[in-house]
Length: 249
Image (cartoon, rainbow, N blue to C red):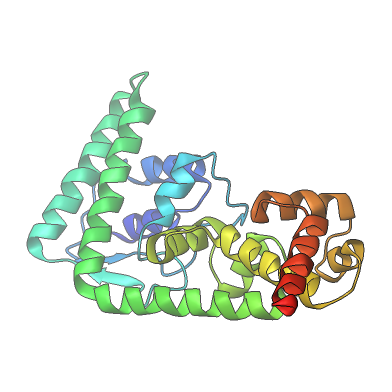
């Protein structure tokens, strides 16, 4: 595969439109090299770190095993059949660029999706164990970071940066392996600590809020009600009544 083709694939990023333009420009010339190695880019699929869930392309890229901290290989050696399938898709994109129809961007995107999915399948077939191990390592690190920093860090993006993933990729891993989002894990830890402080301590709710990194006590009350189903005050009162009833038995 020509160096220009390799560079074009390496440009894939969360700014999907920018990448698609780069891909179409590079693919205008047919690959001539006999190389059967495709660089998949064992780096994060995003440079922005915003984790914008409103962009479906962002979430689409996050699922691929060759992006992010879990990727162990930056190159994929293709078999003869895989190379032919890859080049068919690549040449179809080049041909579409030459026609420049009004709906060319839609077809180019579809072809690019096909290419990414094929690469994902081939990568997983070769590196499935290492990809899963890397995912588990990233989730384990995320859990450790939550334990260390939850009173001061409430945003997924802050943890994702330390794990070496994009927020969207970290969310995708947590949903796939744990069945819940990365944000829900952070909120659960905050609520658990708030309940412990309210139940076993005598600090007012606004002090608990401050200790857990909430600058606005009213926001902490709303957060606690949404997550626990009751206000901090009522939670403490219910626990005190339950403890008193237990002592009288």
